[in-house]
Length: 411
Image (cartoon, rainbow, N blue to C red; front, top):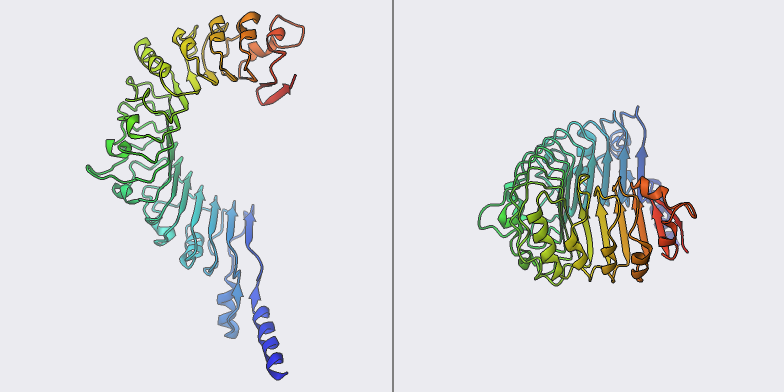
C-alpha cells in the first residue's frame, strides 16, 4: 500500500511540476506590445530550485506579428515545426532554436534583422526551410545537409546561393522566387549534386542571366521544372533526354531565350507544358513543330497583346486534352480550333480584346469539351449573357463554365 501511495504521490508531484503537459500546438499572433516571453522553467529553478517542465510535448509553434518581442524560452524538447512571421529581432528565435534538437521544419517570414541563417538556427539539421521577405538576408547557410525542401522567396539582398549547394543530396524541392538581385547559382564544375531533386522552380529573378549546366544534367528524378519571369536569362542549358521522369515543364516570361530545349519530342513522360511568349516566328515554329510529335497533352500558351492571331501550327496538336491561352490580342478565336478533337478543357486568361469564340458549328465539333474558363476577358464575358448575343448557343451544352472565379453553372 505504501509503495502504491508513494508512486501516486510521485506521479502527482511530476504532473504538478509540468506546465501545459498535453499541449501540442501553440500560436501567438498579433501581440504588437509583447516584449518578454518569460522562461518559466528557468525562473522556477532560480527561485525555488525546483525543476518545472514546460511544453514537454509541444510540436508546432507559430509566432506572428509580435514585432517587439525580444526574449523567449529556450527549452522545447519536442518541437518539430516553427513558423515565424514579422518579428524584428533575432534573439527570441535564436533562443527557441537553441535546444530544439527535434526541429525539422522552419519558416521565417518578414524578419528585418536576419542577415545570416546560421545566426538563428545554430547548426540545426532541418528537413524543410522557408525564408521569405527577409530584405537583409545575404547568406542561407545553416539549415544543415539533410534538407529535403528549400524555398527562398522575396529576399532582395541575396546575390548568390552557396557554392556547396550540391552537397544537399536529399533535396527534393528547390524554390527560388522574387530574388531580383540573384545573379548566379554556383555549382562547381564536375559536381553532380542535387541528384534527388524532383521539383525545381525559379521565378521573378531579374538579375539571373544563366543557370549552371551541372544543375540540370542527368536529373533522372526530376518531375517538375519551372523557370519563369526571368527577363535577363539568356542561357538555359536543358536537355530533356536527361530528364526521363519529367512530367511538367514551365518556361515562360523569359524573352531573351531563343532556343528550345533539346529532346522535347523524345520524352514520353512529359504531359504538361507552359510556354511563351515568343518574340519571333522562328522560335514559335520550333516549339510548335516539336510539340506535334511530343507526348504533351496539357498546353498553356502565352502570347502578347499585339498578337492578333493564334499560331496556326496549334491546330495540328490534335492530342491535346487541355489548352490555355494567355495574354493574346486576338478578337475572335479561329474555327480551326475544332481540329483539337480531344480537347476537354479550354482556359482563356487575360485576352482583353477577345469577344467571340469560334463559330457555333466549330464549337459543336468539340464534342469532348467539358470545361470552359474565362479569366480577365471582360469583352467575351459580356457576350455570354443568355439570349443577348449569338455566343450563348456555343456554350450551353458545356458541363462546367467559369468566369473569373465564379462558376456560372452546370448545364
